[in-house]
Amino acid sequence: MTTVLIPTDFSNNAMHAIKYAIQLYKCERTNFYFLHAFADEIYGPFKKNGSKSIEEQKEITRIKVEQSLKNTISELTKKYHNPKHSFEAVSAFESLVDAVNDFANQINVDLLIMGTQGQTANKKLTFGSHTVQVFKYVSCPVLAIPENYEYRQPKKILFPTDYMLPYKRRELKLLNTLAAEFKSEIHCLYISDFEDLTNRQIDNKRFLQESLPDTYLFNERSPVKNKGEAIMEYILEKDINLLVMVNARHSFLEDMLYRSTLDNIGLHPKIPFLVMQNLPR
Image (cartoon, rainbow, N blue to C red; front, side, top):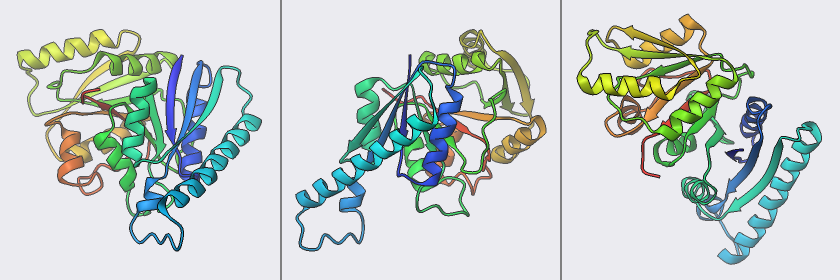
């Protein structure tokens, strides 16, 4: 049984991500939890509570949120008749990141799926601020779905890696199961001018191969250049359906998330983006 957590702000982007998730796990027994965190709706900037107290505002918002979640589940239940799936609603008076982490630890979430943008989407940016915060700080894998991406089975998966990271077994198992379901190719892209690997890299590469036994694994190398651009070129050249990267200390993804933005560094994928976490959980 797979446990999938889907944050929703009830936007079209969020519903698009939900529909992608349902199609992705169409043939697998899955518990879907739909989460709405509403602390920012009470304490956010420029919020005016009028004559109502904070507690009154919380209660009014909670009732509204729970009704919206109920409506979402009702709509999905009518549209999708899959006995393998169950839907549950969760409302939380917390920030999005705190709510996700608390719930992910509470029920041992396997994967979080969300849209790349929310209600206040900036069309000039690939990833909204909430999505980037989730990439940075949550303790479970995150799959971000672009708004205009039409569902395709993830037959070709790109996994850029420098083989320097000690990968997590649990998250590689998630990737292996997903790839096995769709008989997917996984392209491990090493961006370097040198073919030779250090002993540490060789060990990590071997561990990666051993942890993905049910996939078609390809090891590729690209000369050093702007890493974001190299990844984007490979996606277009090979018609990749899913991009996978690892968020860990001193990783390429961490460098993008903390020192710059994914857009400024040249990484703006128009395909689903799976971020695996190498953070404590």
